[in-house]
Amino acid sequence: MVMELTRYLAGQGWDSTIVTAKGRVSPVPPAVNLIEFPLVSGGAWRLPRGLKSYLQQLTRLPGPILHLHGVWMGFQWSAARVALKQKTATLLSPHGMCNSWHFRHIGFKELRKLIYWRTVAYPAFRHISAIHAVTPRERDELARWFPGQSIRVIPNALDLEAMDHLRSQTGDDSAPPVDEPYLLSLGRLHPVKGLELLVEAFAQCQPEIQDRFRLVIVGPESDPAYSAKLKSLVRLSGLEEKVTFLGPVFGPQEKISLYRHAWAFCAPSQTEVMGLVNLEAASMGLPVVTTHETGLWDWEEGGGLLVHPRVEDLSRALKKVFSWGDRERRDRGQKLRQLVERRYAWQAVGPQWLELYAGLV
Image 1 (tube, rainbow, N blue to C red):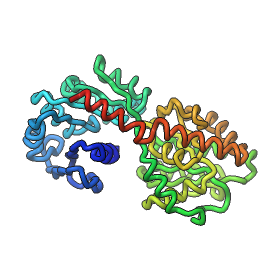
Image 2: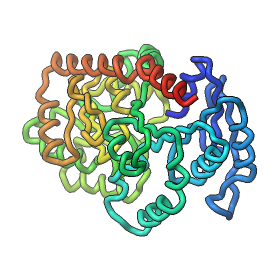
Image 3: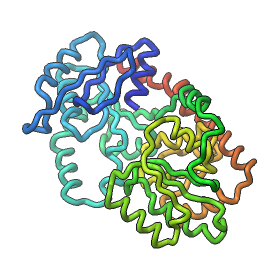
Image 4: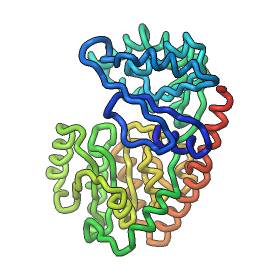
C-alpha cells in the first residue's frame, strides 16, 4: 500500500521520499525517492546510524508531511520524536498492528509490547497530528489506543487499470489449475487467515455438493507448524482428493489466471485490515466470501457474503455459494466489481488522501 500510495501521489505531482531499512522494499515508482538505511547490529532496535540526523534535515524543508507506517519498530518511534521536536505535520498508519486479535493471548511477547506501548511508543505518538484507519472497524479499535486523537478512515485502494491490463494479457485459454469448478483461497498459510475453518466448513459441505467442487489453497507457508496442521486436517477429514495446495504464486498473470477460472473466492480471516485479495478477486468479477473482521462493512451491498470466522457460519455461506447457478454467480461478481469501482479504486480513494494531506499542510 505504501508503494501504491506513493505512485498515486507522484502522478498527482507530489514529491515523495520513502525512508526504510535497506533491502526491505521492492523497486519504487520512477518519480519516488528511496532512501535506505542498513540496520546495525547491537544497540536499541538496531537503529541505523544517521537516521535521526537525516530525518531532522528532511523535516526542515518547507511544509513537509511525515507519514509513518506501523507502530512497533524503532524507525517509527525515532521519526515521531523528530517530528515533535521539529513541529512537523505527522500522520500515522498502524495498518492493523493494534488489532485486539493480536493480544487475544497475553504471553511474554504481548506483555512486552504493552509495556513498550505505555512507556515508550504512546508518549511519542500521542502528539501526532492525525491517525489513519483503513476501516471503520479499525477506527473503533484505534480510539482505545489513541484516546482523544483525530482518526481518519481511508480504505485500501486497488489500481483497477493495472488489474484490467493484466486481465487482458491473460487470455481465456489459460489452463485452470484443476479440472473441477473450484473455490479459491489465496494468501499466506498462517493462523490469522482462518484456513482451518475453511477446510472444516468445506468438509461439512461435501454431502450436499457431491464432489462437484474442489478447494484450491494458494500461498506461502509462512508458519510451518500451522501449514503441517492444516494438511493433517485435510487428511483426517478425508479431503486429500478434494483440497489442493498450490504453494505460492509469484507472477501477476499466474494469479490473474487463478482468479479467472475460480467459481468463487473465500478469505476467512480472523482479522484483517480489509485485505487486498478481496478487492482483487472482486475486480475480476468473482463473488467473494470474507469475514466481518476484515472491516468490509459494505461488502454485502455489492453482492458479496460476510460471515464471522466460525465453522458453522462459513459452512452455511459455502453451501449458498455452491448452490448458485452460473447467472447468479456472475451477477454477484459484477455487483462486487461495481462496488470496487465506486469505493475502492484509486479514482475514488486517491482524492481522500489528497484532502487529508492538504489539511495537514
